[in-house]
Amino acid sequence: MTAARQAFAKCYELRYQLEVFAPRSVVEPALIYFRSMRQLRDAAIAGLQDGDTEYERIFPEVMAALESTRNAMRQDMGTDKLASE
Image (cartoon, rainbow, N blue to C red; front, side):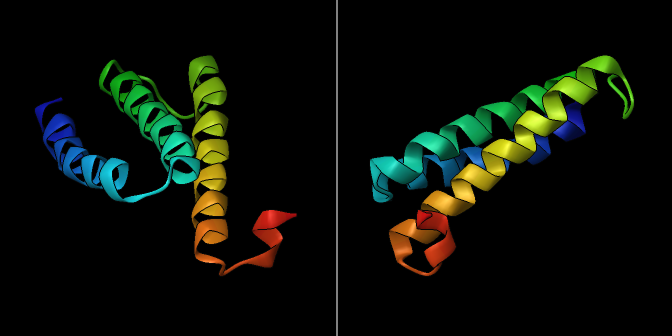
């Protein structure tokens, strides 16, 4: 439990930097992703395992939030035409 929290603590500094430097169009999906990852971390600490009903609910949300964040970043940088479609 302590190791998971310590590893995740490093993400807060990056989150704060993102909130300062990135446009709102990137910050909003990134915060949703961050919160979903934190929820997954907390569930794993509580004993959640792959295959559990709750895992099957949370994990797809995490992956969808990640995809949304990547698309927002690519669109902001103009590096991926597919992100704008």
